[in-house]
Amino acid sequence: MKRNLFFLCLSLLFVACSTTKQVRTAQKGLKGDWTLSSVTTDKGNIVSIKTLFNQASPDCFEGSSWSFVSNNNSGTYNFEGANCDNSTHSIKWFMEENDDEVFFLWKFIPEGMKPKDVTAGYKLKLLSESETEFVLAQDASFEGNMMTIYYQFVKSQY
Image (cartoon, rainbow, N blue to C red; front, side, top):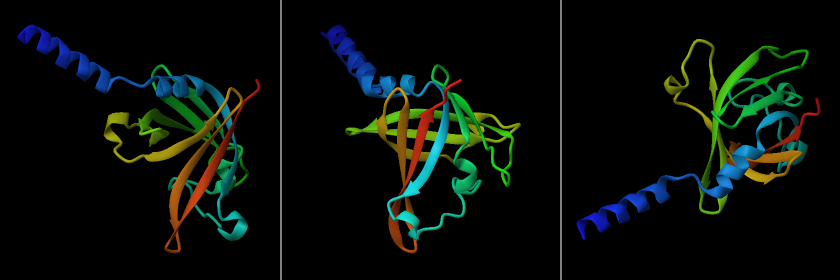
């Protein structure tokens, strides 16, 4: 009896801690090279965003190249604008499911640091995903009101 109870508890723990099929599919779908084609808000042109992710302006992020490696959840991105830092930036990322929603979590890894030493990151909701594009959404506060920032990625054609 104790043996059966042990295996039952072990099975429940395995199921509770395992990655869901929806998250595994989303992670595999992001594998490869992407371009962040647009950054928009649900407020239209009324809102002027100065800095995204405490790093650069939306103009630098629009047109940036992103590469995602799904088997070790690493990646890179780089800016390609005239007034932008044109260096390559390393990230760690993963997906998680909360209720019926899938989230993309990522953190910037500064040069010379280990990912485990970086404790700050970002959580964006995966709104849609296909073989050629995906859209992430981030809630943000603006002048005391909430708004949503949308990031549309398109698959790079090399």
